[in-house]
Length: 199
Image (cartoon, rainbow, N blue to C red; front, side, top):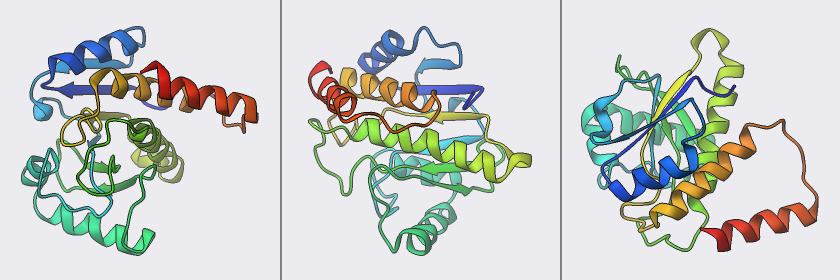
């Protein structure tokens, strides 16, 4: 099991309903309409930009809650590990010095603030989030991340439709819940097309 608990929290009623439709059958998901900061967890997800600039969208209140030093720490990791730019489909786990959310997972949903309504960025971001937890837990088994709190991915400034975001997050979860493998070209194209036209 990747995680013991995943809190999906957002103020958007439409997104919360979409999450219920796609994740309602999975026990580890707790879906909440309301304040993103209402639930403590081992890690908080920041649906960031590629440069770790936390001055807008949900990133600004996250920075205010966790402290300005979390932005500096994130940008230092982006510089050292990714030469100054964290690509969509990648994620970084950093410590926060906050007891309610000891770790921050930064996973860009967009390179810069822009409309991503016709993209698969929520799939790539949630996949990166889950994979970053897996890698972190494998490398530091005594300090495991067992729970995360996650908002809508790309549904704010990015204008990603709620149903598309939820469906793509479920597809990413399905992929990471199975043993790793390289699918056939046929399966790759079928899955890609499904993600494009179904949601």
